[in-house]
Each structure stands twice: as C-alpha cells, then as structure tokens.
Image (cartoon, rainbow, N blue to C red; front, side, top):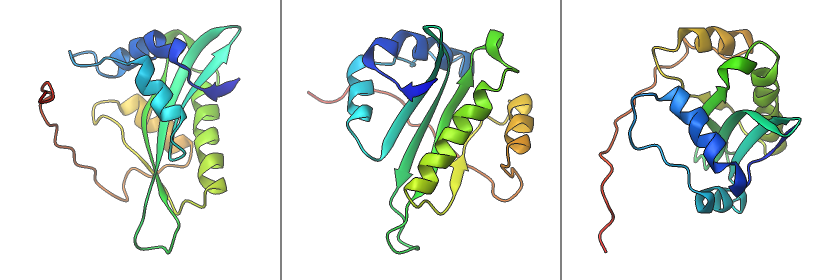
Length: 149
C-alpha cells in the first residue's frame, strides 16, 4: 500500500536515503519536517508499506510554472526501494502514484533527478517512460551550516 509518510517513518526513510547517498554525512530526516510536508499541498512524501514494513519511498513537489497559465510541473527526488525488496514492482507503483497525482494536479511534466552513477536506476526510469536524453540536469550543493540565531 502506498501512503503519505508519517513522522513515525523518519528513521526508516533516513536509512533509505543513506542507501541513495552513502557518503553524505548530513542526512537527517526529522519527524517535524515530515509533518510539515504532510501539511503542504504542493509536497508529498510517499512510502510503500507492506505488512507493516516500509519498503520504499518517493518525494514529489509541485512547482509554480510561469509558462503554462496556472499549471504546475512536478519534480521528483529520493526515489528509493530497499535493496532486498527490488524487482517486485514497488518502484513502478511509486512512480505511478506520482504520475497520477501529477495528472490530478494538472502538471505539464515530471522532472526526475537521479545521481549520474546510478545506471541501474536510470534503466528502471527509462523502462517506466522517463527519457534521460531530453535534458541535462545540473546541481550545485550549498554547504550546510547552522542557521544564524
């Protein structure tokens, strides 16, 4: 079953994110942030749960788009299924959830970001209708510092 993440899911989601970014020392999923996402109609953090076990997660956000009247576009990040649960259609179902939510909200497109080294994931995304040759994504990381108090 796919559902919106709850604050109680923060540790399992954090562990899934560590699979995505094993060298990052800054990953910290806070229950308060999950609740903030739940209360924001433009952001969704979904988990796939089966028999009480969270097996995968996906995050999507609707972005305001100045080019297409009042229609947003969707950005997807943090697509992850636990390594032991892959190959069972969980990732496909998570992507379908995002697509359905995007259609419902009138999105003009879905932009999906993936680390350049995750070639197996790229093949999975291609099999699910995403084209990795249309655009080239760029990221610039900003160092995480403590906020001024």
